[in-house]
Amino acid sequence: MTVGQRIKFFREKNKFSVTDFAHLLKISERNVYNYEADKTSPHMSFWEALFTVFEDLNAKWMLTGQGQMLSGEGDQQVHESVASYMKKEELTDILLLIQRVKELGQKVENLESELASLRDRLE
Image 1: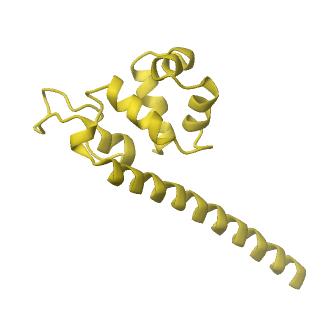
Image 2 (image 1 turned 90 degrees about the horizontal axis):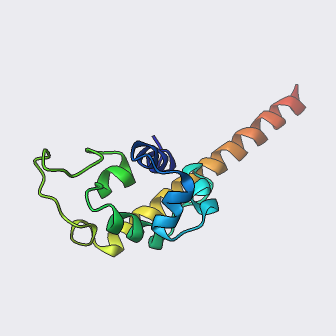
């Protein structure tokens, strides 16, 4: 599951429309659609708003897919705010890595396309 898919899953699980979710986080609906479709990477302000509004949301799950979606009472982990769970610099590093992986994936697709084109020319 991608970051965008986890954002959408979380929003739908909590029965928020895109409009309500965007309003709650003080972002545009277009940004929500773009984030959920993995067209753009969420900005730091989105993450700050998301983890502030939804204190029980597990940042590690949202960013990596590891662990449980919520850091609730049933978890063995001690609930921590996102500020203490992850330093802002660490969160920024993870977001940059996610963006870099997307860019590399696009480059691989482009190279595969060029390779197929070259093979066609040789045949």
